[in-house]
Image 1 (cartoon, rainbow, N blue to C red):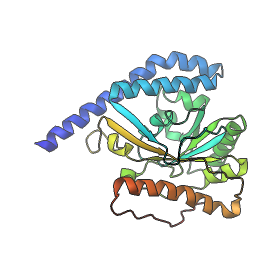
Image 2 (image 1 turned 90 degrees about the horizontal axis):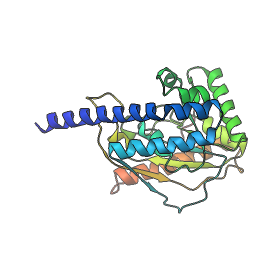
Image 3 (image 1 turned 45 degrees about the vertical axis):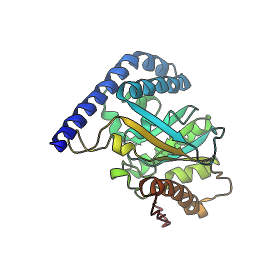
Image 4 (image 1 turned 90 degrees about the vertical axis):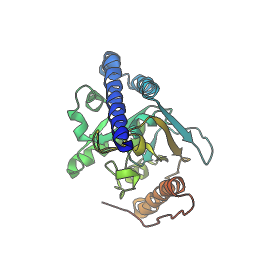
Length: 262
């Protein structure tokens, strides 16, 4: 009986979340459209913050952000590197990135009506299966960095099941080294539990508190492509350590293996 009630609640909440997401987007769409076609991109990000606040308020979601190394002046330009556990990772990012940010995401997002406007005008779609297209996407990201924007990249390239960290792609780290901009690591600890990828009936979906950890910026000026793996490992280990501390505090095991993919 408990399992049936749990499934009903999850289905109802996910349906409500989808309604809130779509209805608030439609409400704000005319403003987004005007700002996008007039190239008021920083104002677009401010409006995204309002949109995220409305979604959280109406859906019962509360982002709780911690800075274990202390708060800092957020660098702009910079690259935010975060693990990817849920679509909520994108939603909550506006609460810890105060400067205008550009998102890299899978090209399939271009197929979503209305929402795809962001990837048509400002955000960067990536077809990772096509090396030339992926290279162009990172060139575009570099152009936004040159303009002083923050770029957020999920180096796993896809949503990981139940928060289990996948191998990292090297694009975010190579771009940071090329542009000599800092990397800000971010850890999404339990977003997958609040909104898990996998449909309405077979995955989690609850209102609640989302725990997010943001580390201090990592200076990349002393790195080159020759020691790119060291930079990647430093970021990965930061993320892994906080995931382990959160989910298994009594038996923390930090994986130190390098994950470097070309």
